Length: 338
Image (cartoon, one colour):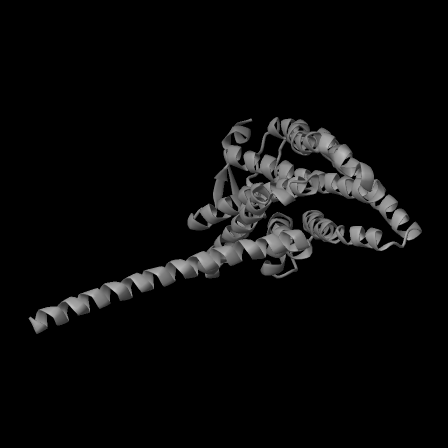
C-alpha cells in the first residue's frame, strides 16, 4: 500500500530519443502547432465571414476545425513544455487530464465525420429536402457530436481514476488510457473489459452511419448517371480523404500500442505514435480548402484582398515619403535662391 501512494508523477521515457536533437524536435513541433492553429482558424474565419458558406455542411466543417485545434492543443503544448524540462516527468493528474483530452478528441473527430457523412447522404439522396431537414437538425447534430464523446468517456476514465499505480514509466511522449492502465498494481480485468466494450460502443454507431450513408450515396449515383449526381458525389471526396487520413492514424496508434515495435527506429515509432493527433488537424483544412471550390475561391479572394491592401498601404507610404522629400527639397532650393 505504501508503493501505491508513492506514484504521483509519470515518466515519459520516449523523450530520451530526442536528446541529441532536442532543439530540432522543439522547432519542428512548434512549427507544426503554429501551422495547425493558423490553418484551422483561417478555415473557421472564412466560413464565418462568408455568408454563402453559412450552410450545414460548412458548420460541421467548422466543428471539425475546432476539434483539430482541441486535438493539437491536447498534445503539442505539453510536448513542447516537456522538451524544455530535463526530467521528462508529468504529474499523475496532468497525465489523466491529457488522457481525457486525447480520447475525447479522437471520439469527437470520428463522430463529426459520421455526422458529415449523414449530411452528404441527405444532400445527395434527398436534394429537395436537404435544407429543410438539415436546417432543423444541424444544431442537434453539433451538440451531439460534442456532448456524446465528452460524457461517454467519463465512464471509462472513472475506472482508470480508481486504480493505484506502482510503476511510473510510459514509453510514449504523451499519456494514453491503455498505457496508464498497464502501470497499475491492482486488478485491471474490469477496466480492460470496460475499455474493450467502450471501443465497440464508441466506434460501431459512427461506422454504421458512415457505411450506411455511403452505401445509399453509391446506390443513387449508380442508378442515376446525371451530371448533377456525379457533381454531388465529388463533394464527398474531401470527406472521404478526411476519413481515410483519420482511419490511418487510428490504425497506426492501435498497431504501435498493441504490438512490439521496439525493433523499429525511434523516428518511425514517434511518427506512428503522434500521427492521429497531428496529421488530421494539419491536413483536414488543406484537404477541404483545396478540394471544395467555394472554400478555395473564398480563400483566394480573402488573401488577394489582403495582399492588395498591403500593396496599397505600402504604395501610399512610399508616395507620402516621396512627397515629403519633394517638399523638403523645394524648401531648400527656395532658401538657396533667397
